Amino acid sequence: MRILHTEWSDGWGGQEHRIYHEMRGLVARGHEVTLVTRPQCRIREKAAAAGIPVVTLPMRKALDFGSIVALRRLLRENNVEVVNTHSGVDSWIGGLAAKLARTPVLLRTRHLNIPLRRNWLNFVHYLPDRIITCGETMRRQLIESSGFPEARLVSIATGIDFAEFEPRRPRREVRQALGLCEVEVMILMVGILRTVKGHDTALQAFQILSSKFPDAALVLAGDGPLLPAMEQLAHTLGIAKRVRFLGFRNDIPDLMGAADVLLLTSRSEGVPQTVTQALGLGLPVVATSVGGVSELVQSEQSGLLIPPGDPDAAADAVRRIIGDPGMAERFRAAGRVRVRQNFSLQAMLDKTERVCLELLETKRRAFV
Image (tube, rainbow, N blue to C red; front, side, top):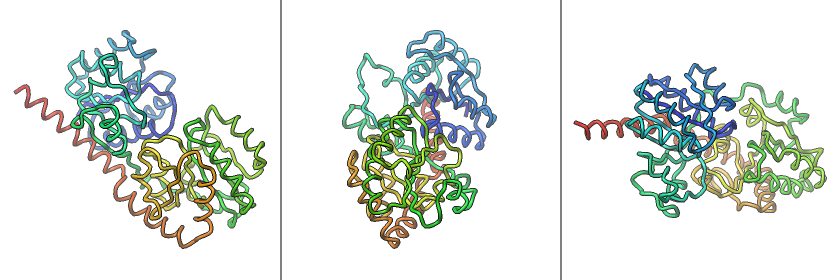
C-alpha cells in the first residue's frame, strides 16, 4: 500500500513514538510510507533518519488552504491509497486534502482520551472512513459520550517492540550514575512535565513516603513546561535532595531496568506507552485509574490502580509494593506475560494492516 501520515505536533511523546514505530513497521512489511509534518517537528528528523520520506508543510492552522492544496497535489501525484492523520490541525488539512484528491481511504488515529464534539461545525470528524483509538476505553467513550457511530471506530492498542526496548546497561551501573546504591528504593516516573501528568501529586506522595523510607529516591525522566515549578515544589516539600529531575532521556529501558516501581499519577490518559513498556520489562506499576490504564494494569494482579489526585493513595500503593517482595514478584511476572502477549508491535501492525486492506477492498468493490 501507499500510505501517508500527517502530524502537526512538535513534541516527542507517546503519540509521536507510536506514529514513528508504526511507519517503520509498515515500511519493513513492504509498504510505501511518507510523512507530512511541519519543519520544526521533532518527528521529522526521526523519520528522515530512519529512511522514511518526509515532506514539510507550514500547516499554520486548521484551514491553511495553501497546505491543503499542496497536500492534495502530493496525494494525487503519488497515487496515495491511505491517509492517516493524528493531531487536530493536520486532521483538518489531511482530511480535506484527502477528500479533494479522492484518496480511497482516510483514517484518523485518536491518541487522547478527551471528549470530542461531533457536529456539522466541527465536520472534520465526519470525514474519516475509520477513527482508530489507542484503546477500547477511548473507543467506548467516543461512542457513548460523543455520539460517534460504533461502526466507524476501531480500537488498536499501541504496540511495543520488546526486541528493541530492552535495557542496555546493568542495573548497578545505571543506579551508580544516579547516585544510588543497590539497596536504595528507586521510584521512576516517565513523561512530559505538564499539568495532566500530575507530577505535583507524585511529589506530594513521595513526601509522605519519605518519612518511612528516608533512603528512597524519586526519579523523574522527562522535560516540559512545568519543570521549574516542580523543582520549586520539591524544595517547598523538603524532598529536593531525594528527587532527581533528569530531563529528556534516551535510555528509558535502562532506567526502568534500574527502578523498583513505576509511578503514573496522570489526571487523564489514553493507553500510556510508559505503562506498557514497564509491564513488559517486569517493572511493578502504580498508576491512576484513568482512560485506558485499566486495560493494561489488572489491579492486585499485575499492579495497583489508584484514584487521580490522591497523594495518600499513591504513597500507600507504592509502600505496599516496596514492603512486600512477594507481591512485587507476582506483579512482575503477570504484567510481563500479559503485555507481551497482547500489546506487541506486531499485533498493532497486524490490526492496522487489516483495517487498511479491508477498507481498500470495500472501496474497490464499490467501483466495480
